[in-house]
Length: 228
Image (cartoon, rainbow, N blue to C red):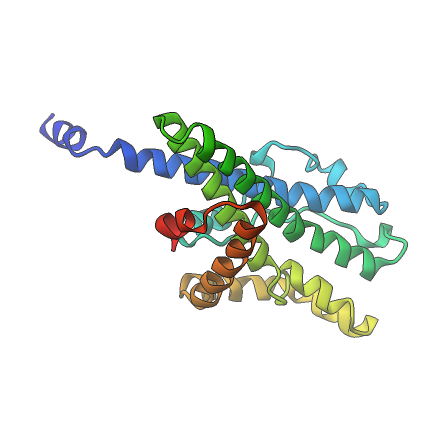
């Protein structure tokens, strides 16, 4: 009973709110990212994602627990890959490149939308407690979405950037690398845990967000205060 009382006395409700907001923003970012992959693949003639039930806004269908944990701890991560069968594309390598690019591009669009929404909250509702936390949620969405977009543009298989880079290679080299991309994922997880990407990614995220703030006229100082 004493341990329970001690826990309740030291319980920080504000910290819990931050965790909930971060988790909600992470789920929104990865859902948007993976849904965009699936929708573009579908438009290009591949119904694999549709048949697998991945053309949905239900975040449970897209979660990779390790990738979600990385987003919550180091602000970069990944989701469960949307299944794609490139044989269904008229131009397989080009179709894969376009499908891959859809994820990061959708995250950048989502970040811009979040900053625009955040500006509205800042102008009209920031003085209220609800407005403060709503603004914080939009800032989380902007930061995590940009982080997810940039991270996935790293040209290391199986990240999205590799699909674009590999499309420039001859077919034999392209398909050979695809066979071994699961080993690249192991290396990416290890390097992320070791903080290998943290410095460069933080720098790039700050620069991209600064540019987005110029476009949306959102004060970058708020992002600096909370995240950088």
